[in-house]
Length: 131
Image 1 (tube, one colour):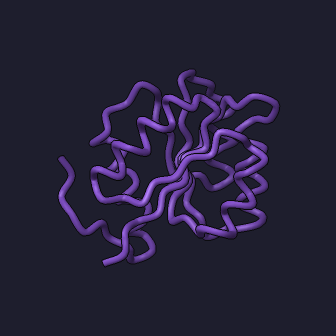
Image 2 (cartoon, helix red, strand yellow):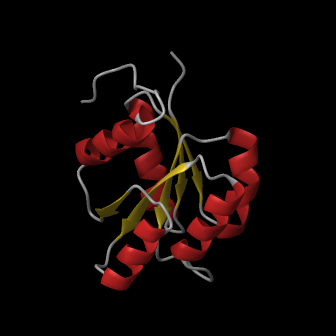
Image 3 (cartoon, one colour):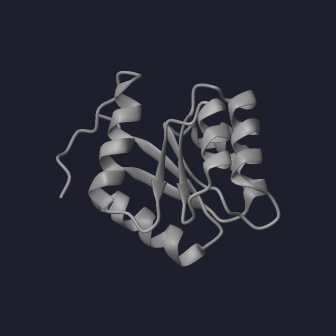
């Protein structure tokens, strides 16, 4: 079975690289983008199943990227990552059809369960059990 493709959009390079490595170890095809401008060009190239999108990016908000993503590729599932509870942004994210929020720091198992849940909506299932 093909691996689930995950695009991580986070301007904290070390965090994004570590997360990608941990997802790859669990048989996901994970890639990172640390520059919000690169996100849209990569969406067309790699066609991810899930985008893990940090809400607090430099220069542009995750909500702005989410709005653009949903206009360009409405089929792409988005899980918002945030280190801060913000009710207004949470409501806005849900209104814009993001699937879920995960608060940093998070457990990798919680994240993989959410990734599997959003991809299962479209008939995609992860092939391996997660450690």
